[in-house]
Amino acid sequence: MGRVTRRAFTAAALSTLAFTPDATAGGSGPRGHRRATGEMRGMWVATVANRDWPSRAGLTAAQQRSELLALLDRAVRDRLNTVIFQVRPTADALWPSPYEPWSQYLTGTQGKDPGWDPLGTAVREAHARGLELHAWFNPYRIANHTDPGRLVASHPARKHPDWVVAYGGKLYYNPGLPKVRAFVQDAMMDAVRRYPVDAVHFDDYFYPYPVAGQTFDDDAAYDRHGAGFPNRAAWRRDNIDRLVRETAARIERTRPGTDFGVSPFAVWRNATTDPRGSDTAAGVQTYDDLAADTRTWVKKGWIGYVVPQIYWNIGFQAADYAKLLDWWAEVASGSTTRLYIGEALYKAGDPAQPDAWQDPAELSRHLTLAKKYPQARGHVYFAAKDVATDPTGAMARVVADHYRRPARAPR
Figure (cartoon, one colour):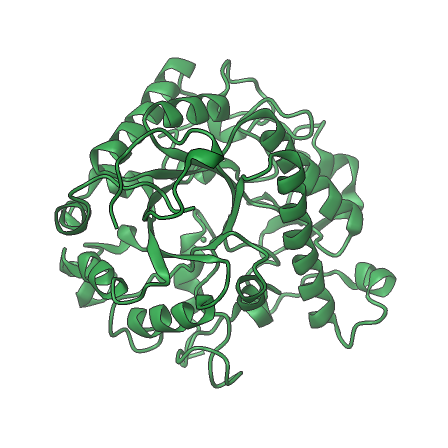
C-alpha cells in the first residue's frame, strides 16, 4: 500500500494532508454449519514483493510450505480465526491458473512452476487448523514497473497492450474497458471454482492512488464507453461499482455462500468535502481519488464485509482512529454488511510513527474502544510477519487482553 506493500500508500495518502461473544473453536466446515455470531480475528498474508511470505523468492517448495504452515500455526497460537492470503498480487497467480502466470514472488521468475500449489495447500491446511482462508486478489495491478518486456511472453498484458496503462511507475489494467473487467473476474473466479475458499477479498486498490503531476490515461476508453455520464469521475466510479456487483454475483453463482469482502483506505470522503463524510483531513479520499464509493457498497449490501484500514492511533489529528471507528459504525448500522476494523500492527514500535505507537498497549486500546460499537464485529491485522515477530509485544497484549478464548469468524 515506490510501493512495496499496499500499506505504504496508506502512509503516503496521509502525507498529503493539510500540508499538501466468544464461541467454541472448530473447523470452518460447510457454510450451513457456521453460526450467525462470532468475532473476526484475522491477519493478512501479503505476498507482493515477498512482504510476509515467502520470505524470499527462490526457496524450495518444501521451504515455502514450511514457512506458510508456520504462519498458520502462529495464527492458531494467537487464537485468530481467519487468514487473508494474497494469491494474485500482480496479475499473476499462486495456483496453477489457465489465465495468468505463476507469480514471480515464488521462484523469482514469472511463469515458472514452483512445484506445488500454494493456494490449494493454504486452503486445506487452514481448514485443518480451524481457520478460515480468504483469497485476496488485486484486480488491476499488473506490475510494479512500467516495462511490458519484463513480463513473461505469455502474459495477457503483452497479448493485449491496449488493456494496459502505465502510471506512477507501474502498469495497470484499464478498469474502463469491459473486456478487462470480464477478464480479471475470469482470472479470479478460476480460484473460486477450484478451491473451497471461505471468501474473496479485495484490498484498497481500484483506480490507482494519485501521483502528483501524472494523469491516468484512459481518454480512449472514456470516449468510447463514457457516454451518458456527467463526467469522467462518475464513469470511473460506475466501472468500479460494476466490478464489485458483478464479482459478488459470480461468487454466489459459482460457490454459493462464499463471502466477499473489501478492505478500503479508511477515508471515504472528508466532511469538508461532503457532509456525509468523516471528521478527517486526509489528502486521499476513496470516492474521489480511487473511484471507489465504499460507503455505497456497505449501505446497499453489495459486499458481505468491509475492513476499513484505520491505520492511525487514537487521537491522531488528521485521521483519528476513534472518529473513523465511529463513522464506519454509523455507515454499517442497519446494513447487511459486516464491519471489521483493519489494524496497523506494523506501526507498533516503529520510531518513524507518532509517540502513541511506541506504547505496546495502543492496539489493545483500539479493541477496547471498538467493543462499545456493536457494529464492529472484529479486527484484522497487517500483517502476518508482524504477528509472527511481534517485536514490541503489541500483539501479545491484544491476545492477553481480548483473545483469551477461541472464537469463530462471523457469518
